[in-house]
Length: 418
Image (cartoon, rainbow, N blue to C red; front, side, top):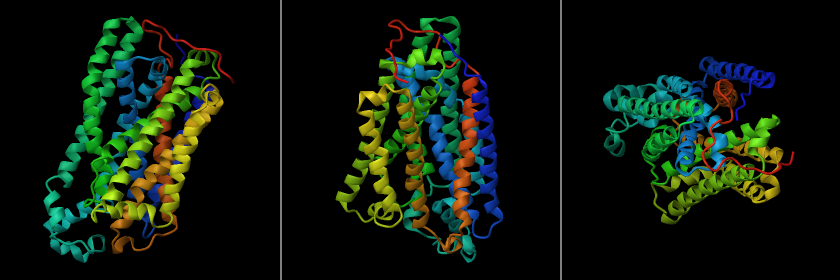
């Protein structure tokens, strides 16, 4: 069975996404010429980069889990997830602006400059940075720009290699229908998952946790990686259910297969909520002064405490309650709506995780936030999102959206409700 979504509606959405992405990037880059907005250009870019890098890397974990466990839920989603993983080269390219704005984003980057050149403290960008901070000096072998860039190259090299091999072998599988290729994919997936966990854990430290270099959490990497998987799975479910107006796709994902997708989406939400709650519980009960400020900034100060409440209710309670009912999981429109809602909440969660970190180490050069800075943040996220969506739809249209090779056991399904 195969279906290539090449109709005009996909092409139209792709054009709109591309235009929106370009417009958002232009809006964000305008901040470079608006007084006081330069730091927010790179900070907003980091939020968008983290969000959509997760949408490109997260599919790798789901694809490898599916190869190891089987299951129609993953079989029907695999081409969509593979298309998302092929956006990795775009995300590697979109990391470049962060290279030029490191000092505006990471406190440890500013410390490294001042540590080697103490006279820089006279410049507003480095005001308030002590040239000799014992804790940051201790972490300097890890938190320095050169080693940071080397690690980023390694991350994208490993992720790109996994994506290339899995996509290449999947294409061969569709052409040759040879079970040995399926076994080869499974053989790669076992060590691949271990490598994925390690690289994503270290990447979460580099891209996000090191924004507050004196804070640490041993659960952060798992929580961050689970967020990537949830983002990727929600996008895949939303995509395939929205395209199920096509008869061949509707037949492939109806009944039990669609119910399995909804169940897995709910399970990923529970895992994300569990890891997030365990980090909060351990830190809050530990009452360690070095750890508490992270939650104080996000739960005790407005407006972030209201965002935290919204995440509990809207990112966990509401989707979980809806996905607990079979009527939602077997109704393609309701399931698509829940998946899209989860995608929106993933944006809010990343903003809540990352942006308060900037408030914790603000110096004189960002003492006040211009109103245009909020548009810069929105422009960066929408811009990167538009470019990613356009690339994703292009990749989705380049190959059949449903697999033609069904392993022994076959696909199954019942009548889906429109």
